[in-house]
Length: 81
Image 1 (spheres, rainbow, N blue to C red):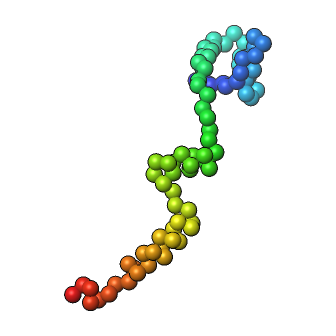
Image 2 (cartoon, rainbow, N blue to C red; image 1 turned 90 degrees about the horizontal axis):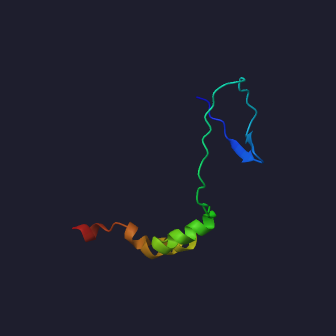
Image 3 (cartoon, helix red, strand yellow; image 1 turned 90 degrees about the vertical axis):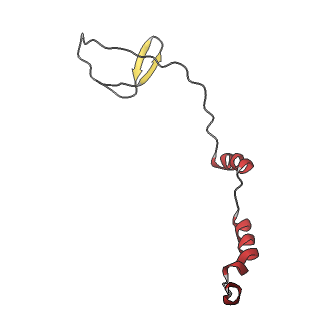
């Protein structure tokens, strides 16, 4: 089966790319129904929406966290005895 995509304009089908179809060849035309418009958000807009629910740390947030918790990375042998 060959799938040919294109548009229908002024009573004619205009394929996306040239295609050779033999004369008197049986074809089936399927017309897609209108799909709702999809809003493709820019990455900054998606991050802002995501941050409302889950939070996203900036580089500044990460460096502040590392500074505040750096003493937790040191293992004190006396504390484990």
